[in-house]
Each structure stands twice: as structure tokens, then as C-alpha cells.
Length: 189
Image (cartoon, rainbow, N blue to C red; front, side, top):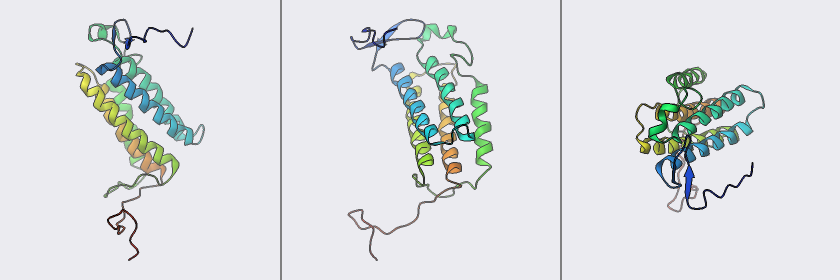
């Protein structure tokens, strides 16, 4: 199979189970943003201990996102062809995320103040993945799909990325008040 097909040279892309849409249509934007979220999660996973708990959780999520992207890449008239947990996100997939959130959140004190991302490479990558996931969620909302839990999945996933970031940094780092002058430089007072 060639990596290039030339079929998209006209600015359109094919949908799962048929049909073509412009590449800037709502569906390609939504599954494209989800693809970017998956890649951001992969960047976090690349910083995790290979075979460790975080690596295992993140690779499972990356696989879930294939399912979610498949669902977003289907024209409304072909939604009946989707298969639960293979090309259709299910309530069970959302519930699995909620269990992960509860499990990891129980391992540290919940922040009571704003969090400053960047304490370490793993938590920073997870926070970045959280923001990309939020964008994917906004794009999925724009599709206005009926009978889907894809948006709910993305919402919980961004929550999980926040929780994992706090867990990865060994708790949490609160925003500290540091005096700054108007130029944004740390004050010497």
C-alpha cells in the first residue's frame, strides 16, 4: 500500500464506511484534534517508565482513541454500522476512565489552588495532553452527534490527564505568589 493515494489532493477526505467531505469540515477537525490528543498522550507515555503503571494506562487510552476517532469519522447515515468498543465509544469505556480517575485521585491530596504545570517532564506532558484533549472535546461537540458518548469520554479523559499529572509529580504544585514587575520579570524586592 502506498502512503500517498492522491485522493485528498482536491481538499477532501474519505470517511469510514464511505462518503467524502472537505478536510476542514467538522468531522475531520474533530478526529484530527483527537489524533493530536493521542499523539500528545504518546509523548507523555514516551516519558513514562516502560512497562510501568502510567505506560500501561496511557497505551490503553491511546487504543481507546482509535475507537473514538473511528466514531467521529463516520457520516451520520452510516452510524448504524458502528461496532461497540471497536468503532463506537461505549458507556463502559467512560466508566473505565472514571474508575482510573477515582483510583489515581485517591493517591494524593486534591489541589485547592491553581496548579502550575511543568514540575517535571512527565507531568508537563500530561498537562499538555489534557489541553489538547480539551480541544478535541470542543471539536467533537461541534459535530452535534446524537446518541454518542464520545464527548463524555473526551471530557473524562481530560480530567484523567489532570489527575495523572498531579499524581506523576508526587502530589501537586500550587501557584505561588511571586512578585513581578510590569515587564514580567521577577521583582528584586
